[in-house]
Image (cartoon, rainbow, N blue to C red; front, side, top):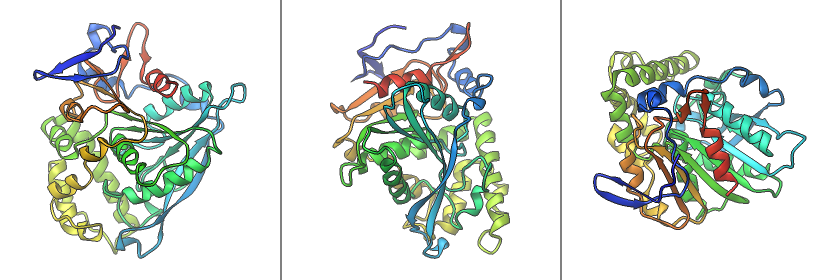
Length: 354
């Protein structure tokens, strides 16, 4: 690893963090290999979470008429830090699209943070979750959409209160990174108690471009399409009077599926009629990010196959914005071999301890 102050992308110089660069063995430097390796969980990692406690959270009144004025419910898992270490604060973790509180990256980061003195709450968005204690699709009648920031804001205020006066942190991955950045922007208007730092890992800052990149690569398109279609059909089984996704099952692309979905159900959620309009409504607002009032760390890779690093480089420099853009790492990878090791948990911990 070497130190870096500046990197170049298409001849544009952007000041970056002084954090050491991630540079693994040449055998695993491909962004695709890094992305595939991210799925490999170290043996025994899940069994370390012996003290996790499921909690059902009130995320406030629903903004969609599909929920008939009901409050949104979200499932989360709370894990206290190890009793042998001093308690440093509480970290809220936000998973990626079609991931959940028990995705490999969430589990590995939680284990590292617990050992360092952090309590962790791993939140599941609507229609996401491991299904250990409750079926996530039954919690709310309305579908998950990336535009549902209000309920994320409401539940984040509730989780921040659990820190009991200690520092509070938000860590989001991919789609969760998108939410984390928008929560950092919202903090200027309605501060979260004791929020000390926000960390966004491979954030989908530009959902439209991320979707198109997924669609251009068959391996990723098949993966996300299969998982999303299974999620939609599960929702339909519980609420057949509300949903019929027969038509979407025939569509080959994520953008096409999104366009079909918002044309039929988008009017329940807001003023958008196409996928393009929908994506624009939950893109990270660059103008608001330029007015940060809380430190934000971006951790991403230049070779991420589904997130264009140019979108992250395009954000205006800000004294509270720390960009760690590594030459490799893929999508939520940062894995080395000889020995096999996930470096992302250590990167996150170092950012929290700054």
